[in-house]
Image (tube, rainbow, N blue to C red; front, side):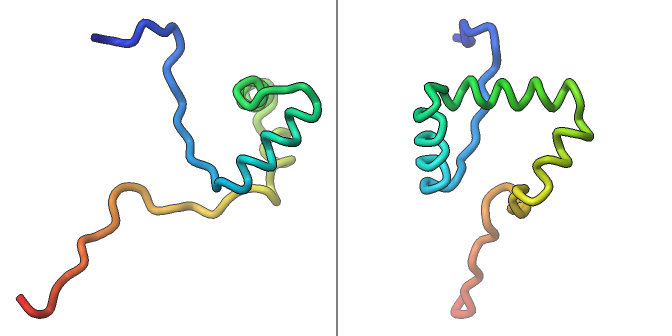
Length: 76
């Protein structure tokens, strides 16, 4: 059965401590994480160069995608 939701999901896995700190910072301002992500996407679409330049020092390092390579056993 396909999803009944109008908008497709977006799945991210930020570090647990960063997520907790962000949630606390937003909650202190009566804001939600979901709404924050949508606001960021709106800001990106409105002015990509300006928005991305603001994030420059906060950008995480790239992580390899997919499963890690299988460990090879020398005893085989």
